[in-house]
Length: 155
Image (cartoon, rainbow, N blue to C red; front, side):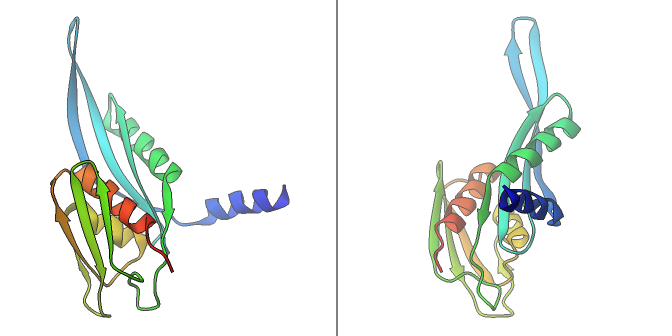
C-alpha cells in the first residue's frame, strides 16, 4: 500500500510538458442539422523517457485539450534511452496506414524527423535520431506509429 502511494506521489512530482500537435474542427450531421465539435491531438512527455499521445473531442477547444491530456497520461510509454540521448537499435512502427522507421544516430546530429514524429521524439527526451514516415501523412496515425515503435524498443 505504501509503495503504491509513493508511486502515485512520484507521478505527481514529475514535470510533464504538453504540446498541441493539431486542433481540428469536426462536424456530425444530426437530425436538426450539423453539430460542431473540436478534436485535439496532444503529446505529453517528461523528456526523461516517458511519452504519450492522446486525443480528445469536445464542443470547445479548452475541454478538448483537457480530455486529450488525460488520455495521453493514461497511455504513457517508457522508452530506454542510451547515454548519447538516442535509442538502442533500429525499430519500425505501424498504426493504421502509417508506417514509421526510426534509427539511432551519432551524438550531435539532432532530431531528423518531421510532423508529429518530431514532437513525440522531443518530448520523450531523444536528441539524436533519424526517422522516416511512410504510407500516410495523417498526424494522429504517425504519432501512434511512433509510440508503437518506441514501445517495441529493448535495452
